[in-house]
Image (cartoon, rainbow, N blue to C red; front, side):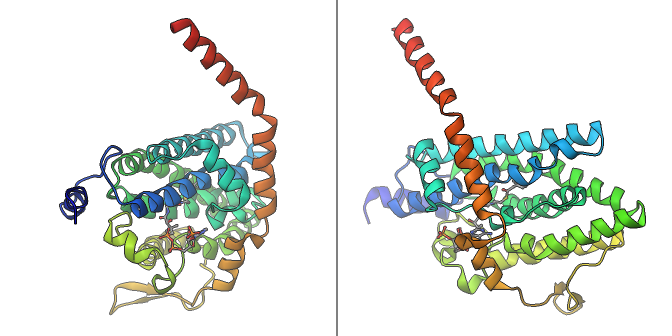
Length: 309
Ligand code: FAQ
């Protein structure tokens, strides 16, 4: 082991942070680029299911709140792309990987948002699951990612509350509204649980990512925390979680649940979910249609540099 590797191992062992200028193993860098860029893509693609409801929001207030929330997601994407850039990849390369299918984004965003209650379910369940994962990632070993997570989590908790507020309005509204809220929960429950990734036994990156403290807790551990937290929230709403085997286990102190449909998960991850094609096509179109903005910004930067020089 040379002195660089020793210094890196010391940082990990002592629970300090690895910073962009520190030496790091190539695989550590690559693993982080993979995870952080996929996280960034999720934030950006994740704007689409909610964007679908901006023009249909039922009041001016709900439109303003949803708009602010979606703008936050764009901001999260930008922080995370910046984190990935500190590891030596460019935005252009990340976009190319997204468009070619080499880089993934969270499976959850490949489901359609069919009613206004879905805006409640997305905020409550999707942002709720994101927070559980991201609070854990605040302690990740890579400094810029860890600091980004601290800021992002603050905003996500507002998102979770705006979603829950919609659920409260719907669940305590008219019978039709309550039915819409239940239907949204039925459709989003299992996809939200899938956000935590495959079972630990099938999580190919788990061992190395946990050893390097990129991930601090396993997929199953975080998923269980989310279930335990969310069940009482559903009970308060008077809604039923669509799992007949969901039951509190006095011995473990956790909720037991049915096995998940992993075929459905891999089908969506491998590009065959209900909206995969639509989401990617929309991103490619926006990227193409807005090429002039990037060109104008580059021309302006070149011009300003010349003036400064
Ligand atoms: N979807 O070995 P593992 C948000 C892939 S939050 C698609 O367990 P790892 C906020 C995985 O990439 C959502 N693919 O992998 C928001 C790997 O494939 P690869 C984003 C998935 O990395 C709310 C393979 O399966 N949050 O956006 C999924 O150790 C509302 C094997 O899996 C993050 O990205 C999945 N669900 O653990 C925005 C958090 N799960 O890469 C808008 C950061 C697994 O080898 C609106 N990421 N895969 O080709 C993580 O914590 C981790 O990457 C995990 C996966 C936990 C997602």
